[in-house]
Image (spheres, rainbow, N blue to C red):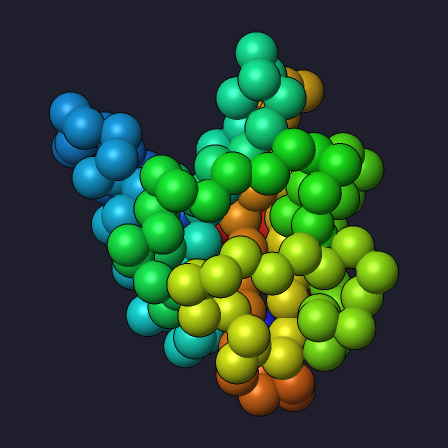
Length: 156
């Protein structure tokens, strides 16, 4: 019975994301609303969306709940940098506890990410084309785990 409740919640969030996208004329507003929805619905400390610019081969922070909102539009990384770049380069989800110990970790001063101890990055793909990365983070190392990849992949 619990599985059915989870499935209904997952479908509900997908419907809610669809409503946000279809009712907004501003993509930046849509992204802000989507990260708020995901963070609130799943009770995570951080939900961020990084958008991929193929011409420049880089990701930029486009929306966040949990990181410093002042950093939106100011954090850029190539796909060869950081955990988030690694997600896009591999085109596969990446789950890491204690991300600052990972060899691909890259700290962005002023982001506030140093206090988060779990990281889940999921590629945003549409018809085989890389659009960006959805990042989920929590203060507690056990706030999310590998089993959450399935749920967040569905949302991504």
